[in-house]
Image 1 (cartoon, rainbow, N blue to C red):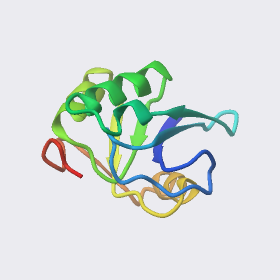
Image 2: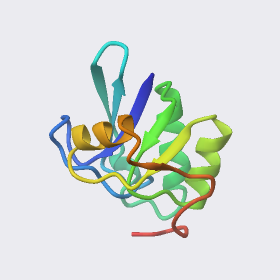
Image 3: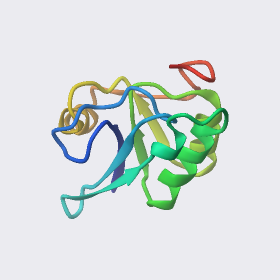
Length: 120
């Protein structure tokens, strides 16, 4: 299974980025191979509109099954939901911490967005 975690850096020891659409990067971890790839999201950091949708489309292209983040807004949530990607929020600490929190069931899956659009 592939798990996309919002990240501020390029490694498992990087801090989790609380924002989905405006996260600096996505670290996509493959639980089958224990390998990961980093997807740059800087084009959406200062986007006037559509950051969540574009970020969700980028994550969808990676084949991720789950997104682990701090928070997720309505447009990103709908786009991820349409792509059958589960959204899990409440992650904190490092990317490795977030993966551990998810795999141990400490984080909650959303059935609706947990913040309003343009949340920063």
